[in-house]
Length: 200
Ligand SMILES: Nc1ncnc2c1ncn2[C@@H]1O[C@H](COP(=O)(O)OP(=O)(O)OP(=O)(O)O)[C@@H](O)[C@H]1O
Ligand SMILES: Nc1nc2c(ncn2[C@@H]2O[C@H](COP(=O)(O)O)[C@@H](O)[C@H]2O)c(=O)[nH]1
Image: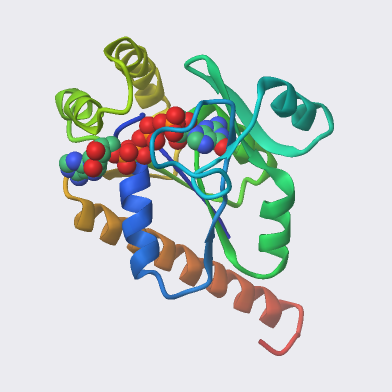
């Protein structure tokens, strides 16, 4: 199953995802994105992102190496296709943490994915989280907040909206969604197998 988590910058996607992966026992893999953004202090190439130049990124686009990509506040971000395909082929779930334009490209290509939008309790909390993280200059925070308003309008294109008021609660809500989606897929598959006369 392909699981896509979006939401405005600073809402807590990374925080929630890391907490989820600490809990998660099932086969479940995070797809590391590629970006032209400079690493923040402590970020490691190949762990947090694949950090690439614009030329390198554009080469990947031209050669069909990206499942999706978008320009977000002056930088490219995208999902390398090969790793997603290999992981899905191996039977594991893939988890993408990406912004809305990229998510809509994924929806076109993989309509059976599960699309979850993480929201802040309100825009004041979002600003506080971005400022509290301290990783961007205030001019960049302002641009991200402008972008956030546009992104929140896209929430209606998602299958689920989850409020990140408290991290453990948001984790639990997302895990419940994934669990129920798994059960739904299993029910459909077993009905399908019955219909075509294959032993489930
Ligand atoms: N539920 C929460 N309550 C309060 N603070 C939170 C909550 N969730 C995350 N935070 C804090 O908000 C800040 C932004 O979180 P995080 O970096 O995970 O956001 P993000 O959505 O992944 O951002 P980006 O899209 O820019 O990568 C961090 O300092 C994090 O500790
Ligand atoms: N379309 C994509 N968006 C992505 C991807 N990886 C991350 N992102 C999103 O970009 C913004 C900014 O991220 P930051 O690390 O600079 O704070 C945020 O919304 C991320 O979710 C991707 O592969 N494709």
